[in-house]
Length: 143
Ligand code: AMP
Ligand code: ZN
Image (cartoon, rainbow, N blue to C red; front, side, top):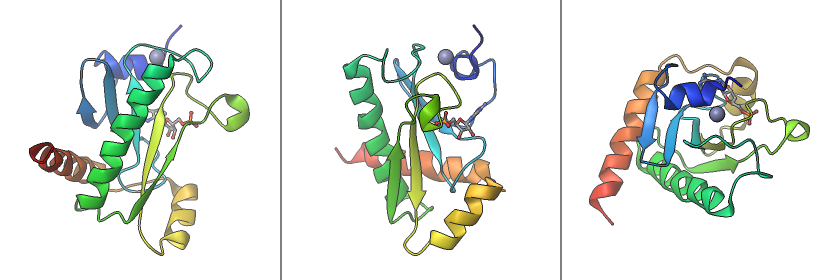
């Protein structure tokens, strides 16, 4: 069965990559709810929380936490983050390769965030990606 996130892992579909290791990949959401909206996925295809091993879910959380921390220190100037996994169609899952959303938030961004939930656009995604990668690289320097 074809899977767009497996295509991204294989380099057969485009993505603005934020983080990668042997088991996981993080890239920007194509229709972001906020600047820097990132998806963290395991490279091995699993569908949702029913078939994903607990250790893999823990790995998603570990990387999501690091990206959330980077967002706070980045030029995106996040003051906080929403972290979410939509588990199943009933929970609004639309891509059936498990993924963790990291949504950088700003203090008082309620109206802008609500507007973005409709527009779902970041006119400068390349720059948002660069800012997150830069902040992650800075975090790597401090254990
Ligand atoms: P969910 O509703 O939790 O399944 O979220 C799936 C997310 O994947 C949505 O926010 C989509 O905008 C995002 N998405 C779908 N296709 C792509 C793609 N090719 N590259 C990046 N993000 C994507
Ligand atoms: Zn997949």
